[in-house]
Length: 436
Ligand code: GUN
Ligand code: FE
Image (cartoon, rainbow, N blue to C red; front, side, top):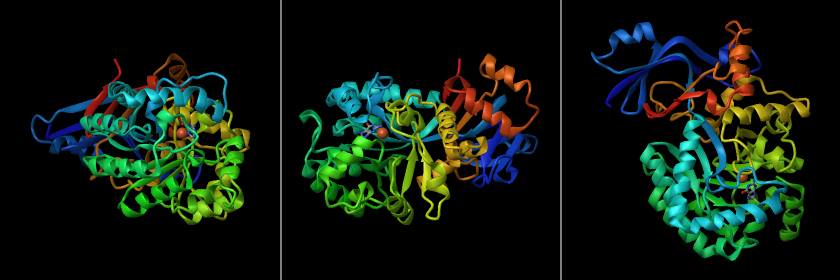
């Protein structure tokens, strides 16, 4: 496959939408063509213009009823929680102990990790997600299994070994030294290999000692281009516990700040109950706050305050994520829909254009990967998803009332859509999933 083309309705953002109906924020080509050479987009434009210039015999995948957008990006998800998702009746700390830490112990077995990595990547691609920021388990083998499977598929993934040296079962604990050395070893093996990148991953303040957070900070300082991911201010009992464990810290964010863990490649899951000074530090450091609506609802954590974080005097970069298995869906469409509802409860809004921008270009920018993914433009990888706004009877019926208004169509797609609305997913121009 040296050259190929993909034809359909193309949607790609050029800027963050200022509000509903901001037609200057995107480019829509009704009958468009994406030309792909060796996995990268080389040309984008009107099919009528570009088809003529293609070499004789170039394969063209035509999706006449498809809306083609960049592959969706999930900025916080746990690959060892595919059999934790939908666990009943607990809030964060109990949920971790009762379900998550039990399941994660099974990843000591490499075979288990490999089977789950395969399932997980299949499921992401079925949902149109082509890049994700992923927590593995404490076991280095879980990271190897995950990256090996991602590399086989050609997907761009960011992942890391969870670091936990306290308040977890013995089978899930490392030490400041082993956590550091194993992470460094994995970085050497995977960071920058193909499309894989490493994220230093202290799980959260409760499960790391000061020595371990120090070691995590050292990794972030020492290794060029690594990411850092953790959880921050998700649940009130969690915050109380952190206060007890780190009595000298000014607040939860300060626990991470002291060890140099804030920064523009740092992703903080949840950020629900922040104090004003925490918002200021996240803003100053250009850290990313990750909105995980289905998880925050399901674990009963609280309501993310998008306006406060992203539109205040000290704006914080915000991305969107599923947080499976605290989250309840692999679908970024469902995630956006629940995000909309969470914001509604606070009198805020999430226009469909803003949601689709977030799932694509916005999340790519939050990862500093705007020149690789998130838009359909020459030079970017041809990671694409073909969406079907009429995928279900309810969607098709509702679409009968919509006469070409993109905003309304996207809102139907996110509100009623899920994996059924994903007709096909491309990774580097290769068909990675197609609905039967
Ligand atoms: N905080 C620490 N670990 C986890 C986790 O696995 N999921 C969620 N939602 N929050 C966490
Ligand atoms: Fe999480």
